[in-house]
Length: 561
Image (cartoon, rainbow, N blue to C red):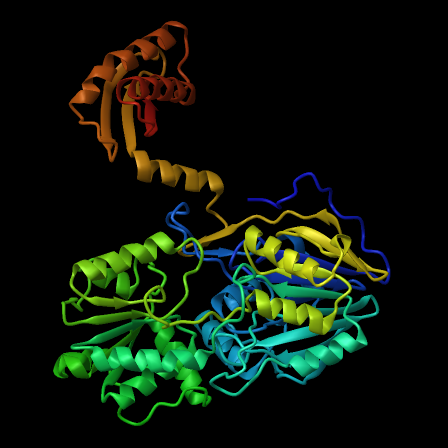
């Protein structure tokens, strides 16, 4: 996938006094958030996250932003600002710091602690600068003022970026919960003050732009979880994001109230909650936490398992439980709570897990049948409120799929922002802010970079196409030995199939066709193995399609001796 406007040319050099904005991820998708700001030859990066693969990307572990645009300008980067510690905002930081490990990381206390724990696994010790709402820092030519915002993880930040080109307000991920569990409100007075001073461009979280009204308060979930706990007969298994400290706190509070012990399952959950507890963001009374190995020694009505896997990830503990491929065997006494939202694209995977758990007899509680999750993103009513509060000169919807970006743009129009002041961009589209106007000026290459095990960037779209064909249609292999001088067959052909639904015995029918094409090639003096392989591929592919109406991958091997 390249930039969404292939007809756009490469941008001209940045004019003196103008600010350039280049989104390398997060516009047109939920994840992979990364934006590069350029002024006076210097760069500031806001967020550097990952995107998680979907079913049509088999074998891929993570998807990174495309660093090509900045690859030869790493020395120009003054800092990476991290708005909060969700994976779609920090997950790609290790891969960028492997290219240059002394780029400063700027973020709040919890954000930096979680990224430092992640970087420790990559053996990177970063340079960090801690900030919080109300802090202002000069980062090269960029003066950054930070604002506290409420989100589904503590310590989230928005930031205003001031340069001579104007003021840009980047909201990060935010909502306007007026009763947050930690008492840390979104800094609406700060936004209003900034609006009074003048905001030239606002970049706004679009995730819930299609959702009317206001998001319910986080604290409304606690009583619902407590009622589920009260009615549970046996074990309670809760799946949520490994970074959702507030949700974990609510689960722990309910466990304490109902005299249950809590065991954390999953490396990221254990790591993140350990950091949160050490920093005081998570309060755990003594004796509540137990090792997962100890749960077999406890009565089932005293057990809570807190796990990752709320998105139906195939190898997660919850998915394996649903498939009866885990040491924890689900029974009709178990209650399973999916305390998270659905990331777009994961609906089928989550539905499969819910059905699997239900089939095994578990009572499955999720956001469709109980208020066990509220979103961390502002909905339409909150976005309209923000536009009226800040009164920006230009608007650029960010963080969302195309439909979310469009819905956010429509909300901006409702508040009086004219069409020509609303910038619709996607990954790779370059926007310049100059003379008070933000406009698209070109595009840069911006594809997906796939992580597969230890391989970064080696998997291509062609590779994924081959994997999809293998997964959907299987393959047919052909092995032939020919005489290097005459081209005549000296061994084979041996034809086998896997995953194609074709019996090996049935493949005997295609052997005469292979022999004919190779004999004709030999008569014509063709002995090049590569050419012969292409001939074999075509004849076998045509036969399979005519006979079975299938298109498996054809893998011919012609050995010349």
